[in-house]
Length: 374
Image (tube, rainbow, N blue to C red; front, side, top):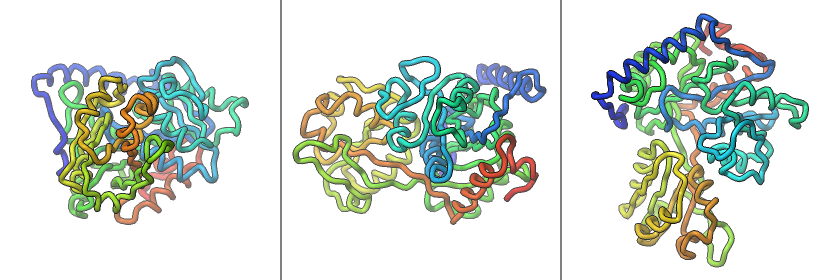
């Protein structure tokens, strides 16, 4: 049910109150123009959230890439969380994961034709992306996780929130996981409630919309995850298994061990546990850098069948190399692609909002200017 993944640390609420004062003061400085937000003459779409991690930013960013890349030269700019480099880095197909971070690496490997860059200073990053040396010239920039980076004024702000951790049940850091007060939702042009279960009802949706109290120009969508065919982490080698569809996995009578280092694995764990009773999950912290000791621990937990991991985790596991794993286990590791599906046939309307913005307005939100909900 909604809110079922929330844990509030009541004893930290005084610190959360102090944190809230600081965040509200910073937002007021931007609202009054004391701190400046900069616009660029290129469509900029921000995909972010109000909470710390776990709302599905990477799958939704990849959805936008897939939607736009056929007609536009798309660039993705990320901070590159936990990368072992500094400053601006323009990714190449052979750029190591540790140089740009796991999520940018994942996107560059899946979409090599798309420009991917990392820079903690997002304004500087966009400046670099718009230089003539970047070819082909960038038509649209997607900012990954920059909702609180208000030094850039995106033309379109997309805010994600986990169905299982809706913001009106949450509290500010460190008592909860909110990065800023719930009022921050007012900066969003599009709000997507992510990771929805298939059984969500129209009444549930209306209840969420009423509670969020959106402005007339804000658009609310609901999305869920669907899973692509599992593919082997190490595709070469003697005796390597082929791809496995979810339907084939449902008839799988061996065990499944999920190895994940993502912020919110609960929905994935639930879905996989419905496939087989021989299911186990081995969790690591979000963006965890796997070590030889971790692999040894995974080896001790693996009782046969297959090991399943996410694409985000696969980028870090693969960097260790196939030889870091026992041969029989290396051949049993499969990667599960996670894709986005908009619920109740609203995908076309979402696609239209995005493409209309990119086509018609490069600096300010079309939705907000029109003052209507499409």
